[in-house]
Image (cartoon, rainbow, N blue to C red; front, side, top):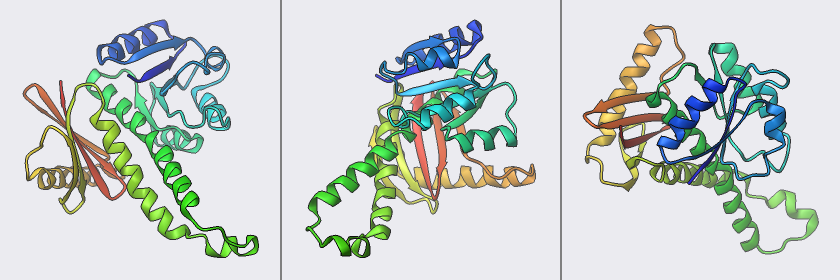
Length: 252
């Protein structure tokens, strides 16, 4: 069960997030300021959700502080703000945040953002595990020749695949998720987890994300990053990850 740390100076926002996240089976603790949060960071934390504007340190400054500390730099940070524009997103990117969510938000907007942020934390650990294994298996080489024989390009390619696979596993284990699939932009299904999705799910995912990309262009936006469809009592989420699509079927 994931441990979520909510930091916001508004008690109403903290309570709303706490209720929404606990409803999804997540452990939640809260703090009213970034300074108070930093004093509690040694407690188990899988995700930090922080408001941008708070007395003292802002959410951006808190994220920057965590990313600069080796003890906490692996913890993803989801920024929340009442004003989300291109500048806000750029600032969030610059400090290493996993995403930005606009307030006020609905449950169907909150959980995909939380799932995406939690899944992003698996990528570095998977990559590091692969690198450690490769180093253990590699024969000893003369010290002077080490830099020349380091296989950087193949290792990066393999780590990228491992990172996406780890995100697929993490998404499949989120509360309420029934099934997931990793899909090429061409529509080819690469891997599945959980309950089987339709055989042609890859083609549907390609169609919907392509349609969303087209509409984004018509609205002068950079492109679609996520599409959600409500199907009776279920939700189908199609998320764009670099050159792959992550398809998730979950209960409403």
